[in-house]
Structures are given as structure tokens and as C-alpha cells.
Image (tube, rainbow, N blue to C red; front, side, top):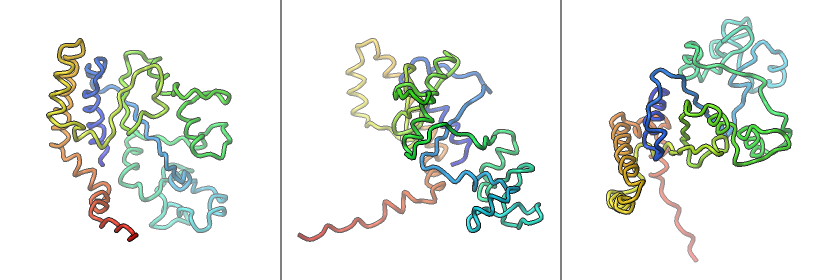
Length: 252
């Protein structure tokens, strides 16, 4: 998926949230903060390569990324030099490198927490909550606290199946899974029933407006080939998986 299409979808999806504060469009050209939490983790020193470190290559004799071609020990398939100490994995030449060159991407090496647990899941929670070592309130994520501090200047939105810990808290945050941006979760009959059910209440106008905006968002995403681009980005993995034959049940 191309970055600009993701950001366009993110901006459009915020309009579909049933919260009146989100109907106001943000200031044009205003700064945006996008947090992508890699829950599957990644090999940090093979993404951002410390190519001047002999210890790195001594510790990883078989999996270290070769030095950049510009260095004396580098080769054509080596890491991409960023500065005097760090280089980027060559597989990221078309994705992250242009962002770095445009000044839209920065790396912060050696960042971490004091949490010494061996649990991958507890570490994720600790990072998302952003609390002290003796505190663990699962309804107080660090991004939600930031939104509260910014007041009306922030318009938060999550694009996950469930609201992440970092956005949980006193501030209400709408959530829309990426797979739902281009399709509706209800059919026309269900929509009509909901509109009638809420029609005579104080929320009736908001419900109707929400459906109208959601329809506009879906139409826009379909016009941009949103689903086709997602399939292409995953190299058709979802299509291939759907076409696999189902296993036969064992005979009793």
C-alpha cells in the first residue's frame, strides 16, 4: 500500500466516526502524527545497520547485513548508507529511504524502557501505557493522555480491529479497522432499521449523517482502488488463501 493512499484513507475515515468533534476538518497542511506499532517485532540492527561497528559483524557472522558499497568492505548488495555510522537495509530502498531523504523519517536508536520482563506481551503493554514502573492502569494509554493535554487541537483515530492500549482512556477515540474502510458492516435493510430506531431521538440526525459520510468514504476508497491496492501490496496472499482447498474431515 502506498503511503499517500494510507494517509488519504485515514483522513477520510475520520469523517465516518459518529462523534461530532470529528466532523470539523483539521487545518490544511497541519502536522499529522502516525503511530505504527510492530507487534510482531523486527530485527532492529538489521533494519538500521551499525555498519561501522566491528562488534555487530563479529556477533552476527552469518546474518549481518553487508556494509554499504561506499565503504572499503562493502558490496553492491550492502546496506544503504545514511550517515557516518548508520545504514538502511537494502530491501527498504523504495519505501523508507525516500522518506528519510525528504526529511519525513527519523530513527531513534537505543530507545527502550526499564522494564526487564522476558514477556513480549508485557513489554508491549508497558510501552503503550507509558506509565511508571509501579503503575499499570490499562485504561490510561500514553496517546490518550496526550490527546487530553492537546484538547480540541487533536483529532485521534485508530485503524485497528480493537482500540489499542495507547489510545484507551478518558478521551473517546473512534476506531475503524483497515479492512472495514472500503466496505460497510451492515446492509441497506439494517441501515434502514437503525435509522428508524434512532430517528425520533436526539441522536437521529447524527446517525443519518454518519451513514451518509460513511457511504461517501466507501465510494471514494473504491474509486481509488483501495482493495485492489491492498491485494497487490500483499502479493495476492488473501486471494490465494481463499482459493486453497479446505481440509477434508477425518472419517469416523
